[in-house]
Amino acid sequence: MENIGYIEIRIQGKKGNLDLSPDTYDIRELKEVLETAEKLLFPEGKKDRPIVSYEMKEGSVRHLFKTSMQYVIGFNALLGEIGSLGRIDFLELNSAKAFESLQELALKHDYSFSLKTSMAKTHELTITRSSQFKRSEPVWVDAEFYFYGKVTNAGGKDKANLHLTTDEMGTIRIQTPIEFLKEYEDNLLYKSFGIRAAGKQHSETGEIDTSSLKFMELVDYQPKFDESYLNKLISKASLTWSNVKDKDQWLREIRGSYD
Image (cartoon, rainbow, N blue to C red; front, side, top):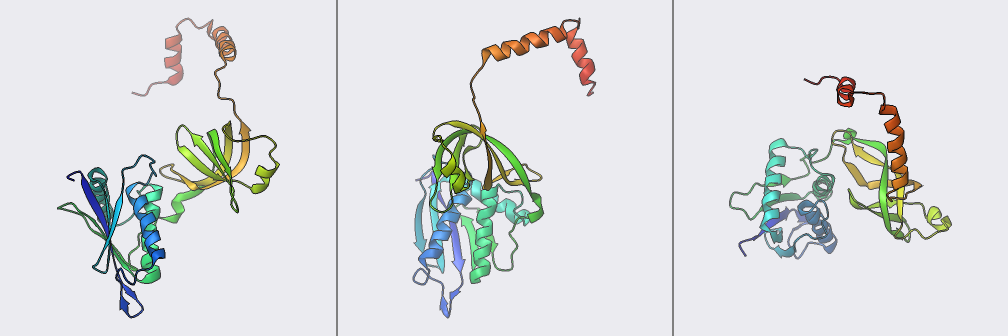
């Protein structure tokens, strides 16, 4: 068990006149903390993540999440960095959202959250209604994107989505009008497409908020190698370069000097 550690989220507060305890802690709040803990440990939502076991203990309410020590060490370093800087703008999107969720719960219920790990020299971070663990809103701007990949799921009862599996970003979910899916005549599933989508992008890091993506347009996409087309381009370029004696020297002159 040397390779197993845990992160702890301790919650202190009251339920009316009663002190918060496992007996006064509602299952809805438990669900919120469970979902938040997974995003804290695995912000990328890895399918092959290690097992996370759970235990609740007395001491107001202590949530213990046991998992691979590698992730516990990484989370401890994260707590130290947040505590040192006092902000969360540098975090990946899902991590930032998880801390914001705890901040919102602290405000809503007047709770105090204490986050630490099982490490001997653990960092500890406290979130209360007076703390300000929120992202700076102005850094997220509206943008348009093109994604290319294979449609692996489409539909939804009330809010429809297209699931597009891409090489660079894995599977992304794009909010899609139900009317478009109803009127599209061909079967979308397991075919490759390009999709133009609107969403939010971080103005400094370029990170895309995949939860904000909304469908704009379907682009026909045929990701196959066309040898004849490539040969035509090569032949066309060869004619253009035929009068250039020293091609390397010509490129250096075009590029200029970066010394």
